Image (cartoon, rainbow, N blue to C red):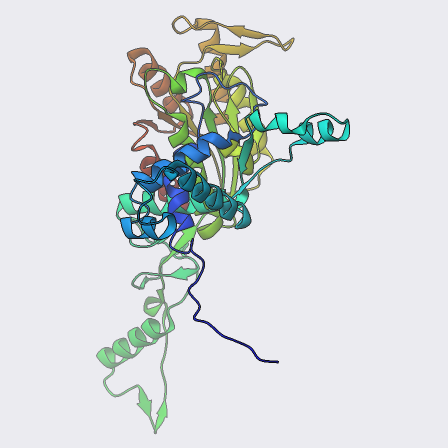
Length: 427
């Protein structure tokens, strides 16, 4: 049998960087409902048409592909040909299929069309239906890593997770110059520095006394002891509280999508650099709920009020189960507390001003967190006078911090605050 070989030219879609494409599509994939107005719970997935349009924008106006690559994929005369739209649609369809094949997006089965076919109906009518797609865990991991890399780059660090502390402590990981031993220090002896001190002291007091009869003798005294300084990495349990009330997409600004990016970046930071830490995500709106991190990208805002107390209460319960050196709540919000869960389960709502009843109950929950040893750091995305006063009161009660930031700088502040707390001095 004879075989004929030809030159391997690769797949014609090899010129498309899928990871770069995902980065261009991140606003769509992490959409919080800013474009949809009100997005009600249960509306899972995004429309395939929106994915098609976003890919077309990246191809034609986003600089994802060069002109030469487009001509190779679509033909040199594609812009002037009568079937240019059909060629472009076919290319986008193949790109979507490649995204699915690589595991970046998935499409749920069309059960309705299958049912119609089984019942003898016209399954073709389902073609007009708005098909949906869902982002996969693989895409979430990549987007979280890319968000973390971009945020760390904006902070100015050259590599992930390598940060210095202002003070050194005697610990496990030696990273600083040795220091004389003091009572209470961990006995992490620096042998070479200790012996050198003993030799120098012996020569200073009794010259030539180190060598006696050809035998080497070194007397180590208390004052010769040197200990290695190191960083102590504390274990930390964190609950990230995200406000998903409707105010997060009001006033012409999407605040919730940047908050989701921060959550993904923080999750990747913990997974890659601090695997012993724990991270939980709590959404607070009319009520509060814990969600798996894998569901974060699918969450959207809705016509909700802001039940801050219920979010803090749920976060406190989650943290009380954690046996960690440090327990903290990172709360990202842009609105005042405007809802409260009554003992009978009913929701009391008041969006006009700061309701004294809601504020007092919320402050009482902040005090409960302080008594449980839980730190609360609030990242406020608004600067109204009343809100600023309320947030500062929360910080004062729980000895936490209040950051007044913007969606653009939110991630930098959250990551810097988290890493600053990871190292502490132990005496």
